[in-house]
Amino acid sequence: MRAVFPPLLLAVAGCAYQPGSFHSLNQPFAGQEATLDCLDLAVHRRPDLPDGGAVVSYAFGNRCDHPTVVDLATIDVFGRTSDGRQLELKAYDPRHELEVLYLDGRAVGHEAIAYPSDAPLGVVCLDAATIARASAVHWMCLPSTSQPTEELP
Amino acid sequence: MTTRIALLLWGIVASLPLATARADDLDTPACCSYGDDRPPCPVDSDEAVGYRRCPRYGTWGASLREPYVVVADGVNYRVFAAPPSAPIAARSTSPVSMKQGKRNTALTFDERIGWGITHHLYAAIDFELGNLRNVDVNDSTERDFIVDGLASAGVRTGIGPFAIAVELSGGAMESSYPKDRDVHVDGMVEARGRADVWLAPWFTLGGAIGVSLVERGDWMAGIYASVHSWAFAGDRW
Image (cartoon, rainbow over the protein chains, first blue to last red):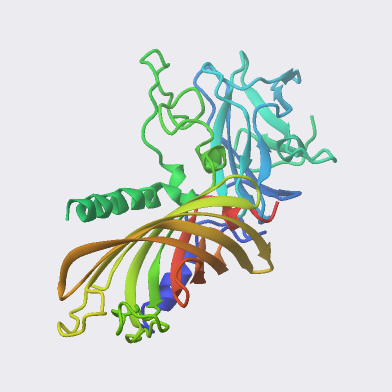
């Protein structure tokens, strides 16, 4: 019995997201990290779509014991083309799936969202604060390579 | 026996939500029913919304779209007050003397499923099966089989790492005795107190004690493990 209980408790407790850890057995937290109220967020830019659109993956964990809002539907996202143009990007959502949802306490989740663009995008910037509906803006900029940048739109 | 089998099957079916109650399991739901008009998946973006078939967007928030559900499995220890034996003087002008039989006990397995009604109010159904052990066949008071079903309503709140609740339960118990071919069905009304300790956001260990409100001297105590569909049962909003 003594040998069974510790692994059982570890397995049960391991399901819960640990605040600030940016780690979960259920999913990776890749890319830039940010903490916004109850939400730990990691944002990573994937290889672009063949037609030039960007794909951003979001991984998030709830630091709090209570549900918290995750708004991936109304994120402010901008892209900058190689010739310096700044474009407001809209999520590719042909089935109108995107909506504001709540993430359970100490739970994790992830999504990937495509942002179509007519022109290749050098940098994609998003206001992560809108995801958690935090008061202060928090821009995160993602180059087309895997290296993050602090450049603002 | 048909009743027992039906109740047993009901208990098995009731335990099935355990597979879906875990919030972590909701990341991999059954496939969604999208049409075939979706665009082909581009390289390296097969998981992006609009390009993928499954999982549907927002599966990580699915548990909160559903009502709060808790599934618990445990063991109850029941004590039954001594059943009065036949009166020594059945017809007499003097007060009837009751020969007290010895009280007996039962150990039952308890399958429980509960739902949140409001923030602190809940309802639950218990199914108990027990006393399957071999009893003394010469003991006419010892139940050799027990099955019961209870419906409960209660209020719950969280205090630190604990969740406490009080509830009122009502139902029926079917039991039999070694020397009695008849099956006895008795009504049950119990007042119960419950306490759980959170070992993880979706998992608790708890205990319950209760007293019968219809059979004086009957009481129960139990321990159980619970899986909750909402972290901390939603008590920490």
